[in-house]
Amino acid sequence: MPDRERDCTLTFQCDSVHATHAELTVRGIHFVHEPKSVAWGYGAELLDPDGYRVMIWDKDTMPGYKERKNVCSLWLKLTAAECEKQYAGTICGSL
Image 1: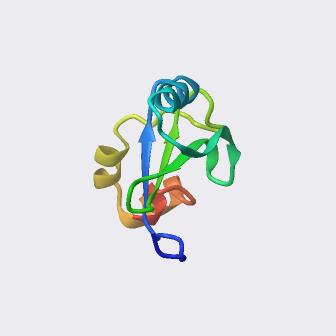
Image 2: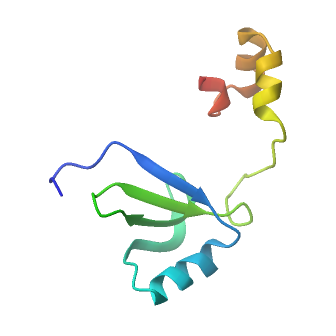
């Protein structure tokens, strides 16, 4: 792996970040860190064989998480200005 940090991250939502971390650890998967509070929220991180960061999280432990049903279909019905106003500061607000 090169000395520089990779610029791509893969994120998985799981049912329980603690249970998934425990299960993968028993299987011999090495984690960068266990589930904890980090800059992006709460979860665990590992590196894939090529050095890319993989993050796992769950909705129960993620601070501020709330369900957004049909966000993509709603986004398609909104004008760009409406979308920016409604979803400013979120991933959908930057689409």
